Length: 144
Image 1 (cartoon, rainbow, N blue to C red):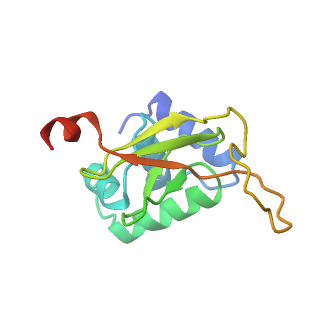
Image 2: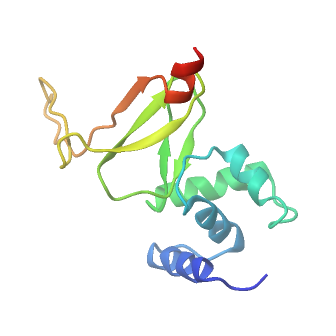
């Protein structure tokens, strides 16, 4: 497989995060780079030809390592499976279609973390807030 700009960039990101640059880690980062929100099964299906001999469990292991290193973000919609995105380090939120499960990024409502202030903080130092707006996407709204 030829080395692409994305592969080189992914290797540098892994090294900067203190992780070994392995083919599965680079492949997962590259698959998430164009955007979107993929679950482990979707990533496995996309990468199984590129990574012969890999398993779904191996993809989960890679996702755990990348999430812990803050190279990917885990988003778990209520009642759904965990999805992963490469967009990290900014303060954005999500729109979730309650019919088809489509998940889209939206900018922070305020512009700075934590975006929301709870009525009481119980002594916590608030750093961020996870916001998911629920509704119907335009496709589901017109067919429903």
